[in-house]
Image (cartoon, rainbow over all chains, first blue to last red; front, side, top):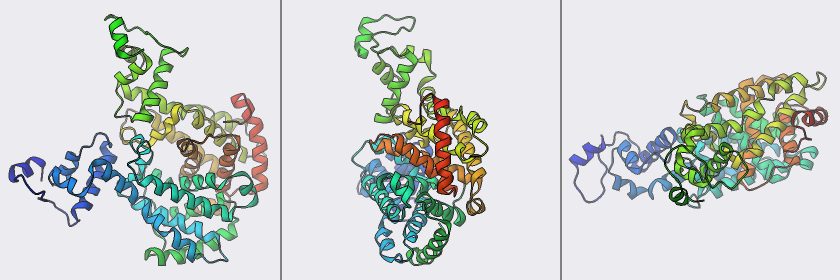
Length: 236
Length: 236
């Protein structure tokens, strides 16, 4: 349903949802349409009216669910961080003491999965000036916290030459950057499958100087834990 | 000089440059001011009038040098790729056969330097939808070519477990992504120094499964070649 159809058929008053075509909740539909528009048309070029029109609701109804465009983008960006961040504590608690490398491997697998599922590869917009220069965006401190978790897990298993040359802060940046290869793959139109997820996770351990035999052990341990964490076996 | 000052003092006619305060060429000054505005205010929020005003020239003069905002952004983004891409052939030709790992190490050092010097960390805007969805931007094929060079150099030195699990294409993405950690560091307000440049370059070799003793040899060989390539010793 187009905006004009909504308009001609509607009355002023309480925001109502009309003419929607999917089974998603209205807020989910708003997020889905907004992500598509932000990524395809650009954030600045997309108005809340465009989003409402794409969903088939009144513009006023949109403000019922979100604090405008910034609120929608922030929620979308949080969706590309929160599922990973929420699992950090569990990953650190459940990682077997005899295979400490499994924790970073598992975080990388979980985070590849999060980024592979983020609607319309929305994480492309992480570095957008509107986002990085604004304090409105709550997702920023979440991303910083996730980066610190990478740095912490990396520093715990870093080989002496790595530990001697890279701070935990810098290691965290290098590791999360490596996992964000997923954003690049999706931008290139490539699916991120099981093999790429494991290649990225193993690459994270290699950056820390972990030798191959311990990478193999970490992969086995992490694959088992992944099943418990996300209810499936390590596919993104 | 502000726009109003330019206006009140100027006459219509041939584009002229007035009131500029620096010793840069006008086109360089336009690039510098545009980069600052794009990164601080956002690309969409910046007009050619804003840029002209920041430089202290007439808006018409700007079009004398560039095809509008897109042309300026494309040139800026090219500046964050071209200096590295231009050196790939020389790097491959001059790398000593007995230390093949030095080529990737050197490319990473050169590219860290390029990104560390890009005006106002402009490479933050790589993934902006206005850029990635447009065919106007010539910098995109340059970035693809640089990514392929990373993949080629990485595949040449990949250990058997890496070669068995990662394609050259994917390895290229992982490696360039790792070097783009520089963008993240600069966004965090941190300078990228000699130590971080070498940490990133060594990390690239580790991702390929290169053992520490060969990383040390590559570092030594690359540091020597870097002096010839950029006229200084490996500082970004």
